[in-house]
Image 1 (cartoon, rainbow, N blue to C red):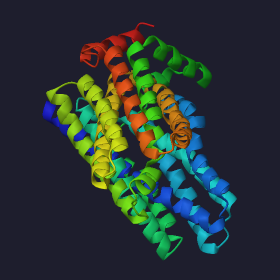
Image 2: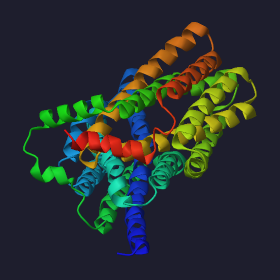
Image 3: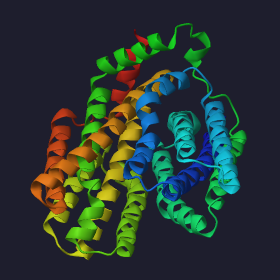
Image 4: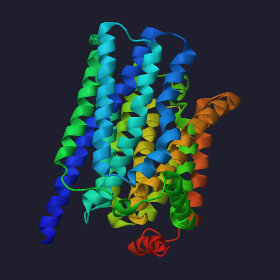
Length: 419
């Protein structure tokens, strides 16, 4: 088959996957605003409101590992269709309850929990589908487009649409949310082919054994293990500051609530720029250079935010951080796709996301303690920035030049095949 024909087929499959991801991310963005707004109409108890956020996050800690093992057994496209369909049904049921005036705070909790479990499957399946969909195409480009879909759907469109439609008619955002997830499921019908790992056809072991197999592979794959540690460190250290962003903007920079929205918007612009530039940077340098430079830029941005009192400079530096961290995430995602065998990708991704997502609430809690102890959110940003320089130093020492070359990928795959 001609190379151009293969490339066109890969591009067409990627477009179907990106279209589904765009629709589901729009639904996620709407839901992340609509559910808290609905909760506030039902209770003003701060513990219950905070508990809703924890409930939305909990499935990633509880289910990322078993979901990864399941995705190494089943057709990933079908899993994504079922997960998005389930989200459409749950959100549609919530819309009906809101319209009938019969919703309670505990029903909101239950819906958020069910949607969260389905989100783990859908998002993880989209990630592990990338190598099979792209084939010989550019993994860096595909990962950057997937990141762009997430940023646009959740940051630029989902939040504003969710809040505006809720103000008009409380049921409206949940209806849109349900339709978005339904479209995400239907679009995947156009993604022709089987996306079940080859090893799944001969799988006879239970999930616990398969999870143990994934852990053993990760333990022996020093490069991927270092990348997991690096990703977790970046998540933990950067969340020290990110969790304090609203206090930094309002109390330290003296911005209004409306101006804070624009401040966050600059971060979204930076993220899009990072997604657009990262593949080009990889081509002219290397993945290692982009990873090291991006982590250092994150440190420089937060250090600068801790030292400046200018809202314009602070917003620009936050945009730089967003661009740099998205570039880093693209490199890490591509490295994961390149180095991990396809039939283990779900399990390794489960471990990866448990570490990275598990670091977020820990970092947020430590950031609050740090701000309280230092007396200023700006000092927390400064501390986070300096620590990110330390993480960049760890990356420099632990990742040898050429670590992401194709030869390294081959070695990692042979490690799996020779077992």
